[in-house]
Image (cartoon, rainbow, N blue to C red; front, side, top):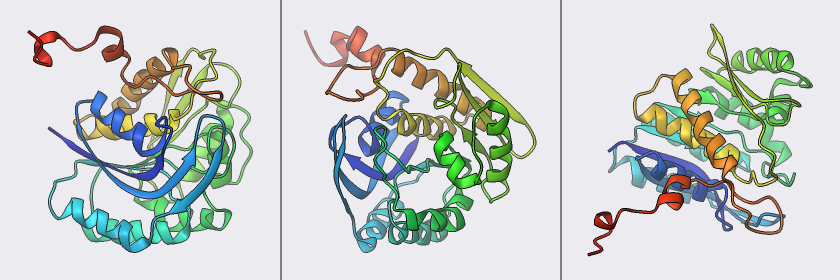
Length: 272
């Protein structure tokens, strides 16, 4: 079984962050591990508070994983402060893992900021170059590329600008752009397009976390980057179509739709 590590924040409501990542890993048949960098008190409607884990504990969590278990891929999500980022970067330099997918989490679904404004430059300069795949949504891509994005053509321009900052490939998610849900991948040579019908639901809490974790899982299982993105897009679209109307705000996606729909077979859980 392949092993995938998430380095991200904890969402106590279970729809995003570490919780969404581990659910996605399990749905893809890989063994999930976690390094928690922030504890976020949030629900489907709002972010109440954030407490960052100390850099020393972040580094020790990474040591605990890497000194014992082979890591086939990493998903990096919420890194709220420069200190968090520098701790993670130190250990990435030390252990030199492959298949790093970075989701530059800047805002919660309800618009609450999850990355300190002063941390954005640190992210671009120190974290972004480690990405084998970077997965910003349109507002995050605007912030990183320094341009406004209104169309797929703008996404293409932004993707090339972001690629030139040092990542190996960039996927810009088009969920915030009008029309069909179009994501684009630029790998430095070619632009790939991934299109799905837009799903009429507000329950999209954790979609970015889920998408990036699905890409990491697919890379761990041996997919090329373009195939990993294609399969992850299909998975997250299904999870959105069958999203859960939980909470008063933006409900979560359905990471285990097939399991919830059909259940475990009796012999799988030891039922006579």
